[in-house]
Length: 87
Length: 190
Ligand SMILES: [Fe+2]
Image (cartoon, rainbow over the protein chains, first blue to last red):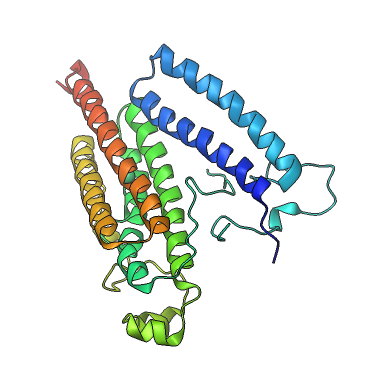
């Protein structure tokens, strides 16, 4: 078993918060696709999410199998913890 | 197609096992108003939706419900994983244990396996939206009862998050109803 890492959890929580706002805005925009204010907010959050995910993946491995860092020599996707592990 | 994101939509970290709550929370995994049925309902119905807005919404809510299936499954896993045989017998889960051990399997709170008979998918888009609005209300009510039954904040907090999502989905389906009704009034239908 791996040892759980507070720094990793903190970075993940920041991503969860931003990505949740994106999911919620996504649904709002589905029924209000011309709301300029929501689009601007979505674009701003999408940029923040990108940066946070990049930083997380460099230190703690891929969040998606396709966001694989080619410089690594092991398939870090298989590393624990998985989302259902108590963190 | 879909991609998997290696995180939960909202954190679930239950430190203390609780088979009584696992048994009740199963309702929202494999029960009639649960997350699995919700996801399959919207993802099946989306092919009959006439407008871009409603197709997008059904796809995106159906996808979010899959993230809720994962949260509820995680709760089940964490609530059951350290249970002893004595705990299992005391909680009345011996029949479940016989068939599944402590694995996560979609049943309702009484142990009845999940069935697609819990939801409909019809050609009429208005019919589908009314079903979905009712489904979101039924899921919200179920979450409220689960919150009343729980006493551990680690359990209550994610349940409150999931309850709130039902309220938002209900609101969005209501807006889709307006959109589809407006579309139906357009000349191509009359
Ligand atoms: Fe929902």
